Image (cartoon, rainbow, N blue to C red; front, top):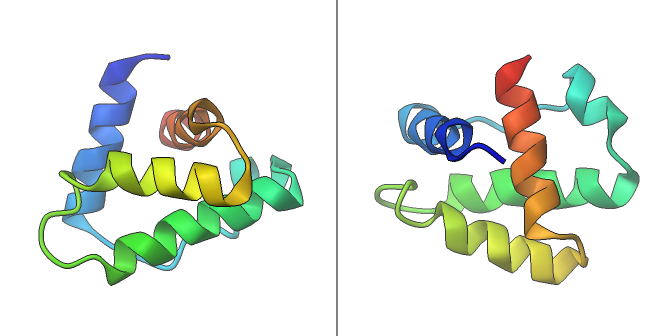
Length: 84
């Protein structure tokens, strides 16, 4: 995984917050379990006060544990979303 893409993702989160990527091609490719995890990441981001960039890694770890998916899979999804 390229750290550059993930860093770009964290900067993007700081610039804008929205409900999620439900209509994107990459999101539609995900399993229902991963879709729930990604939606949970976005909902936690929207509830976060202050700078999101400092908290994104802990949010991803918490969502990963809660939904039983790997941190790598979540980060890989965001990398793929940014590349497209």
